[in-house]
Amino acid sequence: MSTAAHRRFDLRGLVLPLVLLALAEAAMRIGNTESDTLARPSDVARALWEALRDGTVLVASAQTLGAALGGLALGGGLGLLAGLWFGLSTRAERWSLLSVELLRPVPSVALIPIAMLVYGFGFRMEIAVVAFTCFWPMLLLTQAALREVEPRLFEVVRVLGLGTAERVSKIVLPAAAPRVFVAFRLGVGIALVVAVTVEIAANPQGLGFGLMSAQQNLRPDLMFALLLWVGALGWALSAGLLLIERHLFRHTRAQGGNP
Image (cartoon, rainbow, N blue to C red; front, top):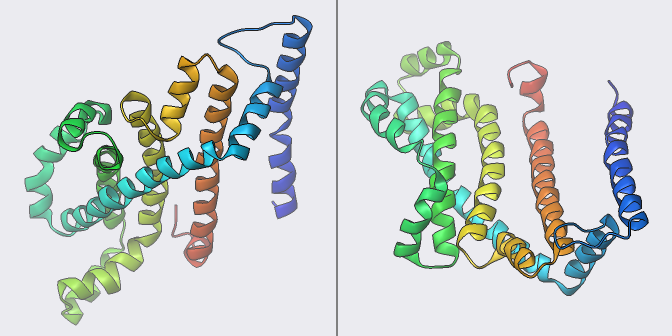
C-alpha cells in the first residue's frame, strides 16, 4: 500500500470521533444541559486552549514526562543489563527465576506507600515507582530478544574467542537491537501510564494531579481537556519512536528480521 493510501486511511479514522463529538455538542446545546460531570466538546477545547496559553499544561507535562523518562532510563537501563546477563547465562537465569516470578506481579501502585516513606513527595518517589514498573518488561523482553539471536552467531563467537564485552557489543546487541528497541518503545507507554497514576494517587504534581484538581474543583471541561492531552502525548511519543525504529532498522525490516 502506498504512503498516500496510508494517509487517506488515517484521515478516515478521524471521521467517527468527529461525528460523535459533533453529535454530543448538538445534543448538549439542544438540551441546554449543564453538568458537574460532563462538558461540551467546545468547552473542553476552550479549556485546553486556555491551559496551553497560560502554560499550566506545559509545566505539568514537563513534570510528568520528566518523571516518566527518568524512571524509564533507570528501570529500563537496569532491566536491559539484567536481561543481557540472564539471557547470556543459563545459570544466572535459573538462580534468578524465583525472585523474578515473586516480584514481577507486584502492582506498581502497591509501592507508592513505601516510596513515600523513603522519598516523600516529589520526583524521586515517582521515578522510583516508574523505574520498578519498567524494569520487568525490559528484562523479560531483552531475554526473549536474546533467545531469537541466530545460534550460528554464538558459534562464531566461540571460534573467534571473543571476550564477554566484545561478544555483547559486536554480536549480541547488534543482532538483538530491533527487538530491544521494541521493548523500549513499549516501556515509554508504560512509564507514562504509571507516572500519571502515581500523580493521581499520591504525588501533587504533573498531569495526574491536574486531573484530580480539576475533578475536585468541579471543572469537567478542564478534566477532559487534560485527559485528551495525556492521550495526545502518548500518541506523539509512540508515533515518534515508531518513526525512529523504522529509520534505524529499515534494512533489518526489509530482510524480514524484525517483528
